[in-house]
Amino acid sequence: MAIKQEFKAESKRLLEMMINSIYSQREIFLRELISNASDAIDKIYYRALTDDSLTFDKDSYFIKVVPEKENRTLKLIDTGIGMTQEELETNLGVIAKSGSLAFKKENEIKDGHDIIGQFGVGFYSAFMVADQVTVISKALGQDQAYKWESQGADGYTIEPVEKDSVGTEIILKIKENTEDESFDEYLDEYRLKGIIKKYSDFIRYPIKMDITTSKLKEGTENEFESVKEEQVINSMVPIWRKNKSELTPEDYENFYMEKHYGFDKPIKHIHISVDGAVRYNAILFIPENIPFDYYTKEFEKGLELYSNGVLIMNKCGDLLPDYYSFVKGMVDSEDLSLNISREILQHDKQLKLIAKNIKTKITNELQNLLKNDREKYEQFFNSFGRQLKYGVYSDYGTNKDTLQDLLLFYSSKEKKLVSLDEYVSRMPEDQKYIYYASGETNERIEKMPQTELVADKGYEILYFTDEIDEFAIRMLMTYKEKEFKSVSSGDLGIEADEKNTDAEQKEHQELFDHMKQTLAGKVKDVRVSKRLKSHPVCLSTEGEVSIEMEKILKAMPNNQNIQADKVLEINSNHDVFKSLKNAFEQDKEKLDLYTNLLYNQALLIEGLPIQDPVEFTNDICKMMV
Image 1 (cartoon, rainbow, N blue to C red):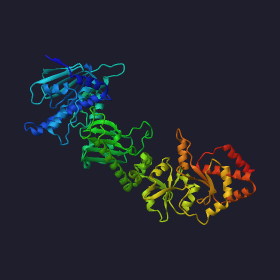
Image 2: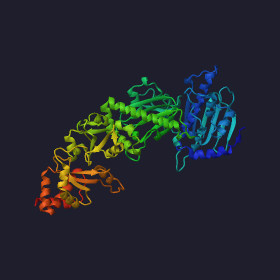
Image 3: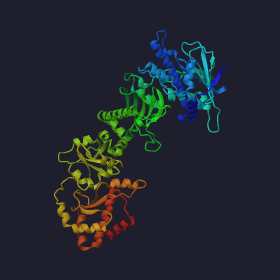
Image 4: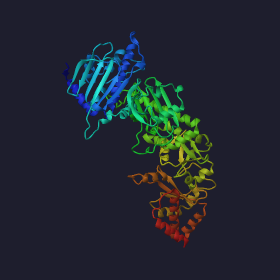
């Protein structure tokens, strides 16, 4: 006769809390019960290592999942070590008492064939989906089997029963549906198969289930019938535990597709096996194409995280820095410290060490790709280069040493993407700076008046067309002791050819002062240009904010109307300058007209809006008349 026993008070409270809050998803219960079953088989394996009377034939051990819709029960059967009456009371009567953890400590398991369960609460996740849980178990070397049964926090009973084979059978009485939730899915064989594949695909013992299939009826040509066939649901041996020499590129591509990491083909795969201060295996992929939601709030970075082959998290963001958030893949480690529900990682040194190693590995692989397969790297950079630039800019430039050699920019000389290292290696001895120009497209930058002097000197110019480019470069400041310099900056570090601009500035200072007054509040200064060759006018800037940065900042929500300090530069060798001098001497009103026209012309060249288009068109009409 079964005598009802109560859980200890603290266990009762823990059970009530756990059923309602410890696990974030109800489907987790199946992962936990399968992991426990796997542990039970592992225990026989370890016993066989020291007991000569036992032999461990892996093919003889399995886990079976049996849904029975007609009576709303779900059975999990394993051929593991089983439990005695005392172990049932100890392991199932005291919540958070882990038999697996105790077994692990007693046997000093260190051979890599690790026990999964350590916390002893996974079994009770069954009460999230079941009104009643029955456990029938026969321990190895025992004649008597026992049945443990509970309907939840009220308590449990244990009584002797008949059972032929060693192992454990767990019977869940699945809850009835409610208005808010359906529990029928946990009796559906295809839903159960999906949960097993998701969480327990790499459990090292076969997980079997009878699956309904359609077969041609014997003796007919086109008549089909539904039959039940026992199938092994899980893959058992994960690809990341196989020897790299056994795997082909197609194996990695198939894994990429099977795990739904993307609809493209990966540009690069990275297979990592580490057995040092922390043990882990990882397979990482660099995708070919950018995900459609990559730059949206919905995109979630992270790698799949497994603990000893059991999926713990779909997206572990802590394993990747933001600038490598495009990387897909998984990590499997036996050494991570998990919380009792196995869903949340403790932020410990093992996790940080794995993340650091992964970051270094990705960086090295990208550098190798840049060096050895330029075409593939440029394909990658066209998709994800912007993210690397964001990485340089973020965290106050702390990542610049990691990322600076991975950056590419379009070159005015090479007419293709070049690295900073390639640029610097080609610099003439007399060149002081790394020159760049910012604009919306390469074509527009090529026509910028500000590039004339730098290009005329034969210096290479990097074209910045991404909105993040200039912000990132401001964080870099220098590369190999060479300072970055915008072609629009006040001082280009180039001596002006065949003209003394300082003398001209002094000679015509009254003219420039008048023009500056006409443009009061719009420009900081008007002066003779040192950079213009054929164009009559351009804008340059002083200070930290460039014109491109101003455009970007103004386009942002809640902008603070940040403006660049603009300087209107006049080409003193252009015929327009003669007209300015004549107007200054003879007709100040016409000079004001010329000044406004030249300023608006400079704005248009920069792609900046004209403050008053109507006034601008009227000024043009006045010129024509």
